[in-house]
Image (cartoon, rainbow, N blue to C red):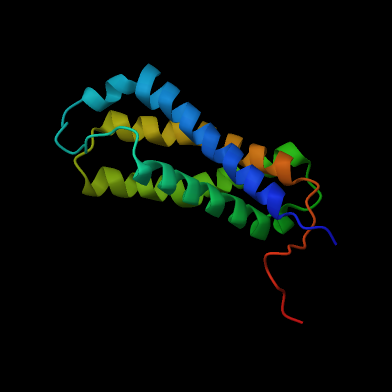
Length: 149
């Protein structure tokens, strides 16, 4: 039995890097104008910080861990389709309810909420594909977790 912990970590790092690069390009560049729409008093000062990097990395590890748990439900599908479907499930179950709550309970501009929702409709399935491709040949066993006998 080989251990797939290295592949899991590689997948998490790949998702983390994808999040960082797309965040800089989209939120820090192309679509940065949405953050100047009123009201602007809801934003914390943003810049590179340890909290941002640690939070995104932990979220990436969780994304990979959940994929390993639910990927069995997608047996028989191709790698790309499996990753896209996983990403769409995460988007529908996580992003959409969160964005509805943001719209209802926070004073964030509607355009920003729409931008976040639609951008995640593209980015989260791509993250799913990244994980699916990296873990496609991964063994179910892992030396890091002892299974009950």
